[in-house]
Amino acid sequence: MNTNDFIVQVALPEHRVFAEQICEEMAESAKARGTGIAKRSPEYVAGKMIDGKAVIAFHKDGTWAGFCYIETWSHGQFVANSGLIVSPQFRKAGLAHAIKEKIFELSRQKYPKAKIFGLTTGLAVMKINSDLGYEPVTYSELTQDEEFWKGCQSCVNFDILKMKERKNCMCTAMLYDPVVQKHDAAKKFAEELHKNPSLYERFMSIKQKLIVKSKPQSKGLKSLFLLLTIFFK
Image (cartoon, rainbow, N blue to C red):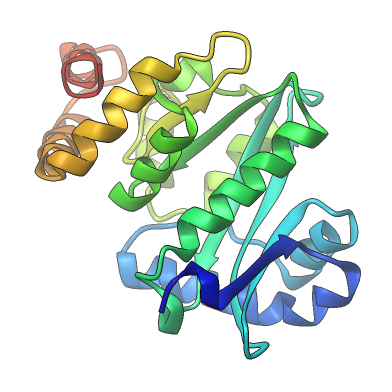
């Protein structure tokens, strides 16, 4: 099975019948990973389809296969491609990458001047983001819109985010800036991840220890930023 077996398209209003299934799969996936996501209701997901701010994928036999949607923050200055999910039966076929490419393209079309960002704990998503031109950044470079951060309240790591005064957490922040466009650095980062995925595992292991032990303004946080520059530049 490969990406030629799927149709990846901008979601249409009639696709809202899949909203409940999508939300259930998002919740199950987060539970399996032992991490949290900002929970969304089927009504919210359906609204994204109606507004043309989502991408949906189907197997060629018509079975729902994957989904992702756009959120905007800080009056459209920041865009997040959120809720990426692939049905378990269609994973490891390159579909997540195809969906991310499509939602990234849609985001650039709708919000050409916006910075596109994401928070992730997964190596696979980091690889995809890097291929698209995202770079790891500190949390201070993300939107400071309170509504965005409220979405983290349903995450299992929310207490850590509060303890760190929203300066860090278990997720790695990544950003695509259409003005700066540091594509060479992002490309190098992507190549390193593909060649040596254990690099990310080492980083995450050290990051988790530092986050749990350190205070928001401690040397541990500064050490973490140093690790980012060493690993990802």
